Image (cartoon, rainbow over all chains, first blue to last red; front, side, top):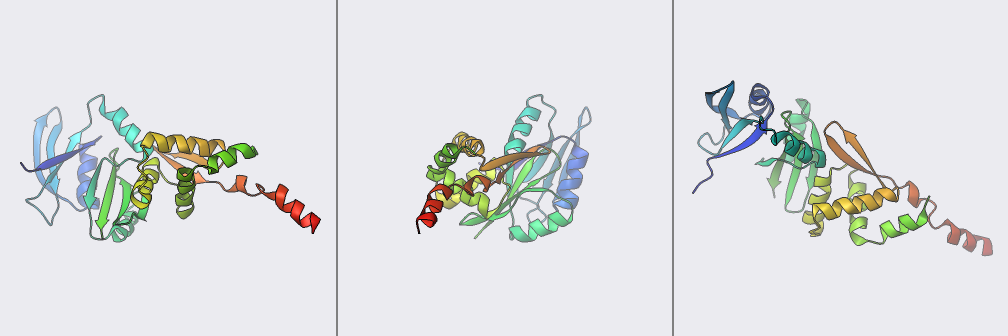
Length: 129
Length: 96
């Protein structure tokens, strides 16, 4: 068994597409109309085009919003991405207007930071030492 | 200021660690405080337990929480510590 896809629940797929490609730097892999305006929209890392896909999934289910609000309120990231240098990404993304709820913090064996993806989620980036 | 609440808040080692971490960087989410306690101090307190510690610290005036948009941040306030030991220290200086 392999993990081929994982997802984040986004409030607007067009906003999410822009943020995850133009700001974070992922590339679009699949974009298939699913009816009702929804799309099967996935992105991948440019370094791993055949790696795990991230599905930018509409958060239309009524349970999604209270769940996302509760996580955001306590600062809990929805998912985590690995980077080579958390501080460099913090500087780059801050320069692009991305808002961080946790600036880079050394946690012993790793350094983490947490940012707002502008689609209702917090995302943690992690660098392992 | 209610000194009893401040002494009670400071009596617990986990609460002192929370203050240490807020002194290291002010304005943290509950998630960051929990992450720092578990990864830096090997304190496996539940999120609910940390939340209750923050309530005790807030009641003592040592921590203030602030909502900013959808997120909540916790800030250190050292004000209640300032005159905590004056009543003993002043007696010393008067006797000398």
